[in-house]
Length: 209
Image (cartoon, rainbow, N blue to C red):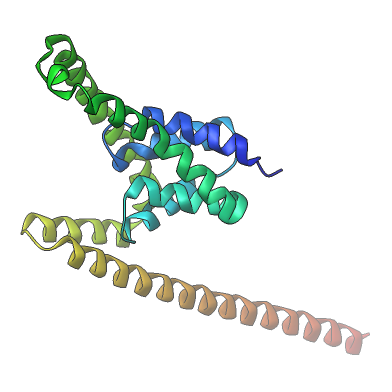
């Protein structure tokens, strides 16, 4: 059963209210609210939409939200999810902008921001853990990880890293499909040979009788 637009708006409103630290921490929030509680999408789908959201221009959190909303309820769902996500930070910025100087000099607020930064580190770790579990699944994907890590350590452009990983991903999937097709043909050939051998044995038994 598809969720209503109101349900989607409220769920993404909750996520937007807790989205501290930018789009990179949205994965555990999406999994908790949409996968574990609502069962609207799977963890794998969240990771796929998150990866797709990073490959297109724009804000990662907003892109990911639009993709999930569109998957659930089409264009209307994308808009409901998007506005639900951006409403809390929009209102917070409007509220804080009027007395930002006072907040920045307040000791208690600085302590709060320090604590929030620690929480953001944990959320980032959980995001990496989720993406790692769904993405680095064999030797080839681990090779891609090491290659891209090396490129970034040598100060390569992020765009180059994305292009290289995308090309390697396409090549890997093409080879995987061909390997499965080849294995299927071999298994089919073996089955045909076994069937032919069985038929031949039956015929020989009938002739002997």
